[in-house]
Length: 293
Image 1 (spheres, rainbow, N blue to C red):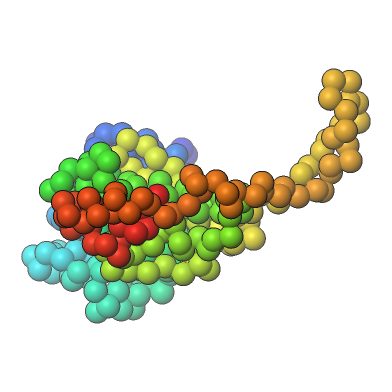
Image 2: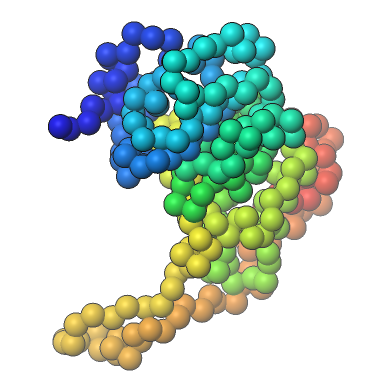
């Protein structure tokens, strides 16, 4: 029997209320297809009425643990018939809440951030919980449209918004091609300074892909060795148009030296830094501004 789509499960659902934008449902079907029948563990930051946890319990019938975390103390009233579901009440970015979450599952295959939607919270949650994601797992940030609004620590050209953070992660994926001697953590320094968090070089090396859909961002995690370009693979034997490729089999890519390329530098013009700090752009400090591209 064909498993019901997430949209169909939402249409049939009569329990606790869940609130999702319509585009999310088919996108989750696509992104989660490989996990549906697996014994996964799921973390959802932001629970509200608890309906999504009930629906995930049906969507992932073999899930081991379905953990929700919400700062609203009223979420302590939520009760579920499914023993796999647990709710932690607290700030997901606090050490105490993290410890309580990990007590219910030490690692996760799916993490969904549907919390405050504030840029600082999203970025700190990613830094805190991405290391707790299993290789092969996926981290999803919902309601990314909020990153364009000042009220949620964002703006279309805000260099430290959550969507700017995930865009910069796409550069981290291509770290080996930059052509400058620079650790991947350097291009994230402004975000670390702005919102007071850290990620390690090793942690960033596990970012496999970053995908954007309207108001959603999907970040997949893999072993570091699976995230490099690898070697060239040449197939076939006939080179009737452009000869010379056969000898390139198993060769590697080497970046062009960009040490003289001013557009490969993270050193902004001093007057730009002074202007940003003087205007107090969303609380940009001199320490954060010095890492602007």
